[in-house]
Structure formats: structure tokens, C-alpha cells
Length: 586
Ligand SMILES: Cc1cc2nc3c(=O)[nH]c(=O)nc-3n(C[C@H](O)[C@H](O)[C@H](O)COP(=O)(O)O)c2cc1C
Image (cartoon, rainbow, N blue to C red):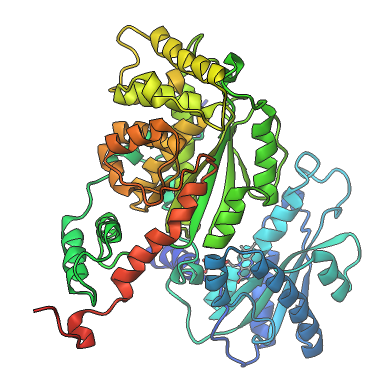
């Protein structure tokens, strides 16, 4: 017998529903503009009661709330935070450090009351429903109490600033917490003059909000799409977003260059760079390309087995450790240029533990030997492309305004040579170089390996019109991921500075997938690898630096970063003849 039908619960009336969404949209993390007015006990009581209504795992209610008003205690807590703020600032790359200097990260003393939310991960005993299987759910529950508190406070007109610059043990000692309690949140609470329309970090350009469509997946991770929309193929989505440069912004940049207080054309190549940056951004002057982040994509290559390099394969993983420890040349150059270095494991043939700065995105433990068959499957090539594009998106959302390519993979110049031949039709003898330095016999073998690889994939293949097929045939995971990285940057109209021959080979794939991606690419340098010259002329890119470098890692591209930044800054800062009252040449 079927159940008698009942009316479903009606939604809240529209105005009440709107109020709920409004408080969610208008809640802000507030750090400035607090008023000294005390928070009345009944108001704080309502806010804490709202926090206490949060859901919790097994109804364990693991939170406690410590209300701190004592000035001297807050001074001690502020001193703890200041120390960690300084440590954090000291570890930042220069461009980030400058931006961080302007940020206020705590209002411990500016607010009349601080509320500490804690978590008791043992409360309720061993059989607390849900927590037995997922211990972290205790912390999640306390965070939900914070969320309730934050929303209720906003409805009361109270601002909240969450401070997390603490060593939790130091803070716990200051608050007299028993050892079974952990600090979840330190919140500064007070009335404010106003609530900003968007996160303060977004206003300051520190980071951007990701579009909700990037975060919603249908059925399985990766099938992105909002409810009611067809799931989008991310790669197709990224390619579709890549558009030609903005002609009006380019014309405005050219015109401005001609009016700037300098002889026309006297900045040479840098004038073109500034015009291209304006076209890419669709604005004149374009935003300064900083902060910048170098993404070093690391992977291993099956073709290493053919004896194309004297370096053992383990060096890839060892150098990844060196990048993460800050000891490689790219780290030194990036420190000098004020850029961040991040390392992406897309296919290193070793297990890499979790380390800050490492993005674990391993697709497989190295590719297959391309002289014996395709280096990777089509699916793997697509996954690597999407991975690279996602990393570009995430680094741009994190506030970077310039991306820089880096790479690490013993034997990757061999894979690059094969890719370059496949995309440009170059002869392997012209596109194959000595990489990190090899003797004549190894060099001859390397050319033969490239020839055999290309021959193996005949007839009708590799087909440059099928860039994913070409990447799968010869590429390293780092090549495919770098191609996706370039596409991701181009889709967001953010410049990407290319390093040497590996990035060049990847750019050939990116441009084959989306010709307008070339507009986002800036050739950092010309590497000593002969295949790189072939690539640059095929792409129509002029290198900024030509110092005979043949290291990779992103080193040549990082050297070019200040040049690209200077080109943008000149267009922005240099006075015109009119504005400076300087007479022009008659
Ligand atoms: C877990 C957590 C810790 C945070 N810690 C800090 C902090 O130490 N200092 C700070 O200035 N903001 C901190 N914030 C605030 C975030 O920067 C802020 O929520 C984010 O920029 C979004 O802005 P909105 O809250 O106004 O939407 C923290 C936020 C969360 C959720």
C-alpha cells in the first residue's frame, strides 16, 4: 500500500530566504575598522547560542568557547601572533612580502572581545557515532560552530576576524587549556564601521575567488558543471576560453609608447612586450605581472632506458627534493627575482612524501619508452593537460599575475626533440641537442632514438593535427602538463614566460590545440639546445635572454621575469611628453 501523499515542507517565505542568503554573502572576515564599543552580554550570548546549535558528529558537541576580554592576556596573545606573522613574512618571496606588508592579519587588541573555539576530540567516549571511523569529524564539528557564530555575528552587525598565526601549544598554554582540548579558532569580535563588499584579500589582490563552476562536479570528480548544465570537458572549456589579443588595448599601448618621454622605439623589444601584455590583459596599461610563480613540472621518461643521457633516472626525484629544499639554481634565481617556486610531481618514478611546496599530481611513475610504443595513453595525456590547466587556474586564483614554466625530468630533452620534430617537421639531426652534456657516441644514439621513435609511429602518425596523439606518442607527463599550464594561463589572459626547449615543445602542443594561446606566451630565453631555436621560430617568439643556458628548471624564464615586469611598469609609470612638459623632437 502506498503512503498517503503529503505536502512537502514549504520553503521559507522569499524575504526570510533572502535574509539567509544575504547573511551568507555579506559575512566577512574583518580586520580593519573595528569600533571600541563593547559587545553587550545579551548580544554575545545570542551569538554563542547560535554557535552551540551547530551540527556535530554523533551529537558530540566537541566545542567550548573561551571569552577573552582581559587586556593583558590579549597583549600576550597578540605578541604570540606577531612573532609568527614575522616568521611567515620572512619566508615570502619579495613580491608577496611587499603585498603582505600592507595586510592586517589580526585585530586582537582592536576588538573588545576575543572568542576562542576549542575541540575535545575525546568527548562522549569511544563509540561516538561517526567519529570512530573519521576522527577528523570532531574538528569539522567545531568548525561548524565557528561558522554559525560568524553568521550570527554578521546578522548582529558584529565583525569577526579569524587569526591563525599561532603555535597551538603556546596559545593553549596561555588559555589554560587542558591537554585534551585543541584550539580550533581564535576570533576577534567587535562592532565595525562597515563590511567590505568582497574578501579583503580579494580587494588587496592577494587572491581571487574561484568561480563556483570550477568547484562543482557531476557524479565524479572532473565532470565539472553546475546543476542544470551539461558537465563540461575541462580541456574543451579552457580551449574555448582562449581568445585573440585585444586589438584596441594593443593600439592604445603602441600609442602610449610613442608619447612616452623617450625617443620612439628606444625600448626595442620591450615595447613589443608591453604591447603584447596590454593585448593579453585587454587593458592599457596592463596589470603588473607580479607576483609571479614558477611551476616546475617533474616527471620521468621511459626512453631513459635507451641510454640517451649519462644521468641516472633517480636524479629527477633527487632534484625535486633539492627544489623543495630551496637549493637549486631556479630557487636562487627566483629568490633574486622575487618569485615563488612550486614543484609539481606529474610522473616522477619514485614516491615523494608530502612536503610544503610540492603538488602531488602523479599520473604514473614515468612514461613508457617511446621507441617501443606510445609513451603514454591518450587518457594519460589528457589527464596531464587538465592537470596543468588546473594548476594554472589555482595559481592565478592564489593571486599570481604571471606564470613561469619550469621542468625537471632526466631524458626530457630526448622527448622534446621527438615532439619538436613531430610538430614542426624538423629533421631529428637539427632538433636533437646534447642536453645536459653528452659525448659524441651518446649524441649519435640520441638522434637515432628520436628517428626510431618517429619511424615507429608512422604511417600517418604522428599527426600534428592531433596534438594529444603526438603528446601521447612522445611526450613526458611534464610536457603535457606544461601544455595544459600554458592553455590555462592563456584562458585567464595571464602571461606565461616559457623556459627552454621543454617548455617550447609543450608550447607547440598548446598552440596546436589553441592557436591564440601563443598570445599569452613570452619566450624567456633561447636555450643552447638546437631544437629550441627551431621551436621559437615556428612559434614566432623572440627570446628575451640569450646566454647559452641549457639547464632547464625554469632558470632562463625566471631571468626574463624582471624584463617582462619592467616592460609593463614602463608603460604604466613613464610620463608622456604632454604630462611631463617635455618638448618632442621636431
Ligand atoms: C581557518 C581560517 C583561518 C584564518 N586565519 C586568518 C588569519 O590568521 N589572519 C587573517 O587575516 N585572516 C584569516 N582568515 C580569514 C580569511 O583570510 C578570509 O576568510 C578569506 O580571505 C575570505 O574572506 P571572507 O571571510 O571575508 O569571505 C582565516 C579564515 C579561515 C577560514
